Image (cartoon, rainbow, N blue to C red; front, side, top):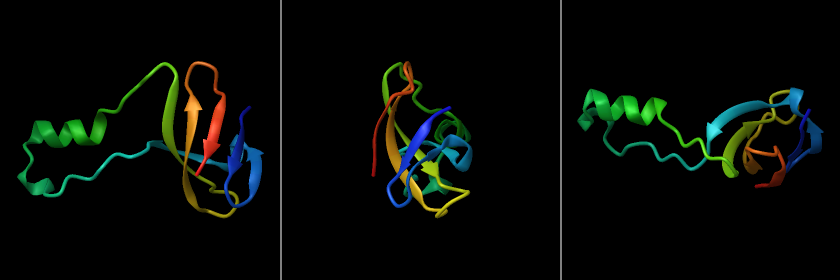
Length: 82
């Protein structure tokens, strides 16, 4: 189990959280102008690095706020939340 540091509630068990995917993914300025292939790439393609990775998390069973944190995908070590 992971101990995830919520910026508002402090460290909590991972069961209280929902994973929100890769952080810092910008929404396209004009989605209607994208081709089907470009839109599918935006929706479904994300980085999958081995090492530090910025992620979005939601404290669903706590304060219900969204936040970013850096997690090492190889070791599950959590660098910090913001």
